[in-house]
Image (tube, rainbow, N blue to C red; front, side, top):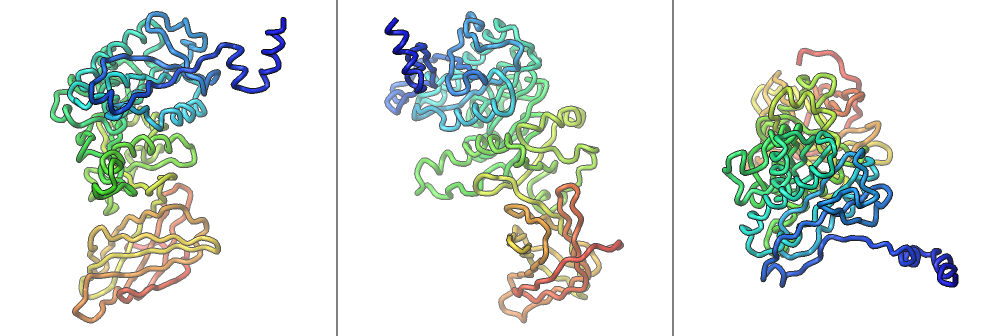
Amino acid sequence: MMFRVHCLLTALTITSFNICKGEECEQITDLDLKHSIIGTPLTVRLILYTRENATCGKLLSNNDPFATPTFKPYRPCTFLIHGYRPTGSPPVWMHTMVKTMLNRSDVNAIVVDWNRGATNINYFQVVKNTRPVADIITQFIQKANVPLSSIHMIGISLGAHISGFTGANFNGSIGRITALDPAGPSFRGNSPDERLDPTDAQFVDALHTDMDAFGYRDSLGHIDYYANGGSDQPGCPKTILSGSKYFKCDHQRSVFLYLDSMNDSRQITAYPCSDYSDFLDGKCLNCKRFNSSGCPVFGYDVIEWKEVLLRLGQTTTFFTTNKEAPFCKSGYQVEIVSWNLEVRWGTITITLQNSTQEIQTQINHKSFQFQQFTKTTLFAQFERDVDSVEKITLKYVTSNVLTPRYKLRILRFRLTPLKKGLRPMCRYDLLLEENKDVTFRPIPCHHSNF
């Protein structure tokens, strides 16, 4: 009786409450560099999180999934699969992704802990372990008897190919595979049955952020996203002097971009395009082939574009991001018609202002040609939105240093927000002198052939 009273009193704190109930929370295996040096034999643990136990993982039994009370087969299952762990530490992002996912959807969130097997300085041995991991996940799915179409696998790096191998075991019947910077080393040039490919699930979406190092360069899904061209992410170190972050930042950025996409207010538009250069030049902003759906979004909610993407076949898309969250940028189509008699070359800087905000962008990835009575289309991307733009400032810049300053005479300037429902802004008859700001108030646009 006294023991029961003691438990009742101490239940006022979470810690004491867990002690009284005997509740144990599972964590991803935590190893260190010494384990990597000696190598670790493969062990796979499946840790379940649901809305009932969102912060306390429960170990699932491969032989009897239903032995864990919070596992409900009527819920969709989402598997989170990490990649190579050369230092043995658990992924820093895993708990955040589980929490964010459960906030969005009532699912069985299953963390696939294969840290014993992923921790090894011998990367090639870790690659050999990917198929056995997929086989263990396959066995669990078979015994859980959940609808295959309700399964979503999110695989990071090597985890992307584990997802693919698992999907292939079910002849591509699982619902969705999301590949976050799928691993390149040991997989580049492999045939489809030796890596992730679009036939491994009903829908496969893949993000590329480090294709020139740890990631995979070519398309792997029904839709492939190349963030900032697929390599060299903004805010990541450019030299080895930054230490380990130099090696992992681009690769790891894929996870944080996907996490950010799970926030409804931060959706990034992805533009189907043949290459990154054409995208930056503003040649791929028209998404009429996607009908009323418009351009697909990146990330968690792209499933809403599933049917149109399956109809179109493999689609390659591009987008750019900020250095940190929120990563989404605000895009505008810029149209400039000049009336100089001679061709002018240069770049444009645009500043948008209202009573409380000011943002600026430089469209300077190359020098653009401005020819008389010819429309030059540019793509302007700002770090954030500015509501109710009151003033616009333009600056025309060239690399000219030896001759007199050039002037760019603009017959029409048109700035069109790519966000639906916003009207374009115009100005007519402007004179831009090289390296000098010209500020004006935008006016409504008139119909014109230019």
